[in-house]
Image (cartoon, rainbow, N blue to C red; front, side):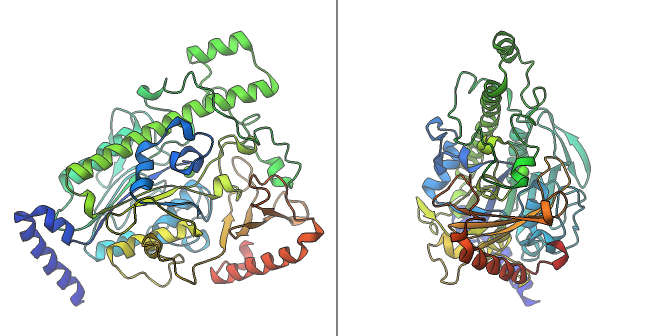
Length: 492
Ligand code: CA
């Protein structure tokens, strides 16, 4: 109880100091955090992660966070889908403990969330953009969010006071609103946690007008598995409904009536594999144009922080709610525990703490984010949060007992895209997945991958007798993780 009084007195002291020397006062405070979060941004579409779009120089501003800070090469999610990922972000818990299993469940806002704890520690909290959790936000001094998925063009925002519509592209407006908060509402005597959440590059991939032609004449490299026949895997990979070939729509997804596209289709009338190729190229033009918009806006935020003298004492982090398929396995969307959607980007800049240009290769997961925010601001982490603070990793000091395996669980089935329920365990090299429940033959189907020999996860080794012992070990580890994370028996 004395802690609050002490902090209040300290803040008051800082207010006086701020009046005379704002830069020194800023640096004497606990660090601020600017958390920039996009939706469906695959690591394949970030220059700093390398890959087949590297030469496009897609993301110079996001890449600058890797240059000036740390790139996490092995960051993963616990459940690869939009709203559950956000629930994990706020609670530091797997879906089975925060209650948000899929996009359709309601979210219990009354539960413990990191921002409520920060608020109690006299840190200002603000959330701007896509949160995808219906109902009033709690624990934010200010919140202004897109309802549901939100709109790309002229988006409506919801606050405690009602709804407001803004004219423009959602990525630009989310940034405008975030900078407006920093400029007009942020209390300089306190540290702050500002969450800037973009809708982009979520389906249907609508870029701002100024980016619509950016990639119009480009031909992008295809992923090796664009024409995957799914022979090396089980039922789930074969029977999904998220393929570029069969699921991606010519109208809303590919905007076939745009004059250039309509003219091409009329002249060439592509069919079969040729049509898949055209769809992939068109999808990438729009998706990457959305990324260009996100990156430009990240640049606006970084410039604002610098111009306002806030850059030295502000941790800037960039991530996405999950990864995404950019044609790998012939797919778009996410959900599967295969690498492209299981992974998520994570970059962090923290002047004076994170060594510029550093890389971390430890297994980290979105259950760690809430704990990390609390630790950065110096607030105790509740025991019932399930992840670990990444602050030691940021300092280049990975604890000896850092995790060597990850638990994953996807629940939304039957549902759009028809990805069967599955859970699994992944180490740095191996991944064991168990698909289960409705529409899975014999109620469960297992897959095992060796990422070293098969990084594209094209052939499950589960039926290979040589792997018998490894499978037993991995099953034991899966069971250990289920117990460690308190997964209820009826949910697997
Ligand atoms: Ca998403």
